[in-house]
Amino acid sequence: MLNHNKNMKLLIADDHAMTRKGIEIMAKYEWQIKEIYTASSIKEVTEIIHSKKITHLILDISFGDGNSIEIIDDIQQAQIGIEILIFTMHPKHILDGFLAAKGIKWVVQKDLPEEKITEILRVFLFEKNSGNLEINEMNNFKFFHELSIREMQIFQLMMQGVKTNEIAIELDVKNNTVSTIKNRLLQKVGIKNEIELIEIGKILGLEKNN
Image 1 (cartoon, rainbow, N blue to C red):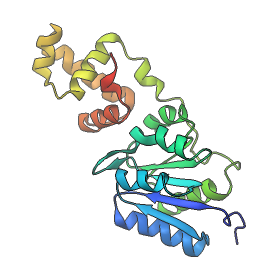
Image 2: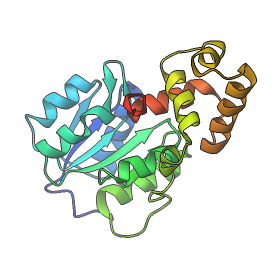
Image 3: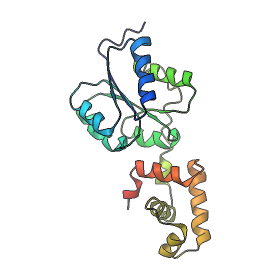
Image 4: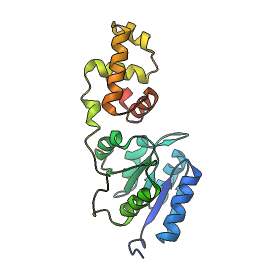
């Protein structure tokens, strides 16, 4: 079996009990990892990070009490050298570049086939230098930095919950112009609905930009 697990201390952080349990069972019985912790909230993640030595973290983004992107810096400062894999339902190609800037190259979507997820987790834990397995696409976040001033204005107003007609009034443009730019944003990022686009923008902190 794998010989790299003696000193491994794994934290599985996800607000879905079945996800946590499934990964925990695999880690414990198939990969024979001895020291495993689980967390279902940002609060629990923070408590464990500051009270235990953790070498590997499998981390969801969205929790009931916040999103984990906001505590990445704290995690990395508290656990020097920690390996982090982001396990999320959000589109991977949007998050890769942003997370790469924080030194995180492992981003896996939950809707991949189970066998693919299992293989990526195994590589993350035991064979980090063996290849990318579709993990290291890090250039797509630049999309957000390439938006025009008008596109970013509309995107940020969308994240604030401002409706199309109100955006048009505030920016002194036609409703059709706002709708066209919204559709352009969705096409550029490869997402089909505004709700998901807005959620990703908020996760990445883009509503705070000026």
